[in-house]
Amino acid sequence: MEKTIFEITKMDCPSEENLIRMKLDGISSIKNLEFDISNRKLTVFHTGQINLIEKLINELNLGEKKLITEQTEQTEFLENSNQKKLLWSVLAINFLFFVIEMTTGIISKSMGLVADSLDMLADSFVYGLSLFAVGKTITRKKQVAKLAGYFQITLAFIGFLEVLRRFFGTEKLSDFSTMIVVSILALIANGICLLLLQKSKSKKEAHMKASMIFTSNDIIINLGVICAGLLVNWFNSNKPDLIVGTIVFVLVIQGAIRILKLGK
Image (tube, rainbow, N blue to C red; front, side):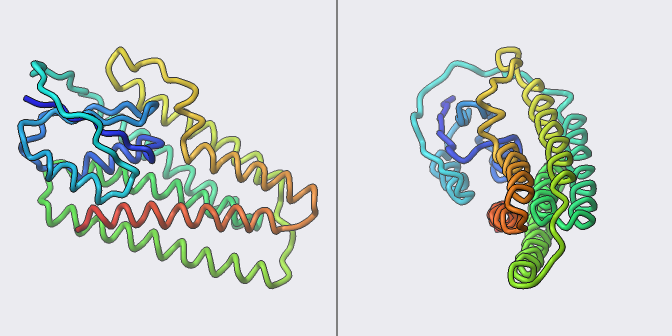
């Protein structure tokens, strides 16, 4: 058996891990996948077809680079019997905060919160697709991935139009206190999701590194909305909120494109 180590520079959180797992699902030569999110490394244990494996990973455009392929004597791998339960848990947390942020974003007139809610929905799609993929045909998986990706892009496009309308129109100032409070709660929720998923790994990886949390896109987005709330209050202007909202919508579309690539 061989093992190939990849560096995945854009693997910021467990949602990218699940994208890779779905992309490589069904490759008979793959015996196990080991993810080290904190160091952005993926180790593939396989019995051949490395060119196909590398090609499929490249299609996700996650900043991948093959580091080394070598022989290994390892034939036994730890199976995580609680993986499905954990996926349901993080899916529920992400979807709950999609509802909370979308609702409070509309009420407080914050595009930053609305955009972040779509990012939460994007993660929900990824975890949902991972759960759905078990036992389903490749064609069915591709159909669902395409549906999720196009739906996400549609929502982000609508969000862009709303940003433009507010940028050139006159709109009531966003409620900065709601932006900050809800984003702090979302920050905590993302931290819990990362902690749950990281603790599901082997004992060696049970203690999550702080660097892993603070390099996550989800955490950075939450901090961005918090900063936007402070700037809205400071400058008495909606522009910081609209700028952060636009940036997050771009990230949401990038995530949707990755999901669409699963449907190819």
